[in-house]
Length: 203
Ligand SMILES: [Zn+2]
Image (tube, rainbow, N blue to C red; front, top):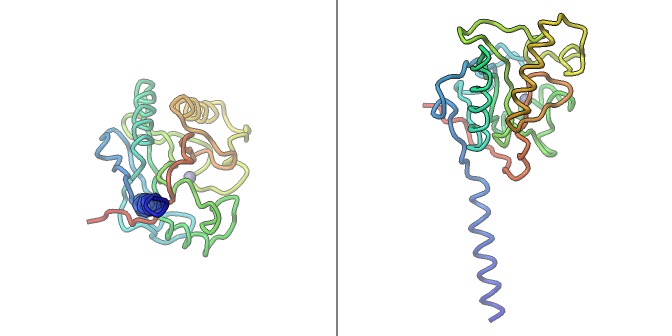
């Protein structure tokens, strides 16, 4: 009887492990067509200076995608929409970033906890107007310096109010900030998601 019990426990355990590696991410473009895209790691215009993604896609955990669509609706009602810079990032890409730029303030160590981007539960974003026009947030995306910190206030009132709007809208929909990057938002309930390394589904 004990052996049978052990067998059942082991079968359940081994059935569960592959599930953890399975990606159940959704393509944001299938959830909503109302986002603006500038997936920088699919271009050489990023802090590494190389193309790191095979295609410009935003994949997220379903809960995160739903929350982000609601946040976008909040911004739309105020004359803006979200521009997506980065969403899910395969662990291998994290390793490449780390090998070229091993600074833990800016790149999460893939051999430690990794990045919440590796779980499909974080987004790097800005706002644009509903016509797709630029909204000034004070620095470019992936600007690694004090001016990108969310508690840097030496900007015009317009820039500060743009940042405030982004922060208020995202926090109201279940996202939290990190201090050093105004563009980064992690979904609050991110701990239960596994770290993933599935490649982006490029045709
Ligand atoms: Zn980020």
